[in-house]
Length: 107
Image (cartoon, rainbow, N blue to C red):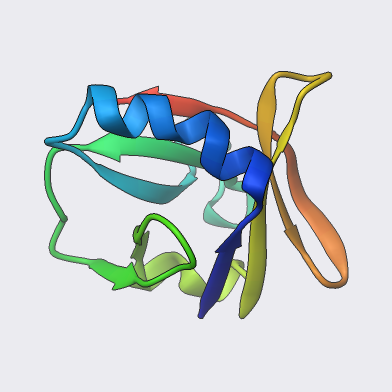
């Protein structure tokens, strides 16, 4: 899996990562309240530690934890961008927008 941060996304998340230097960035495929695992929504989380199912994906900026069991719902190549107008992160891949309004949550 390849994840790339755009310059806008790196600039935006930098302050949060520095403010929570004890945490790691996680790309969470969240299924809570979605009714079914296939209907999950991606989000960025800052977490205390790696869970047993997490794998660390090296990126062009901040390494990202991804749940191995949920990788099937993600694409092989993804980009994390920041949309200034929506004030949210955006997860894209070459063929589609996976989440145009991805939140960042400190856990």
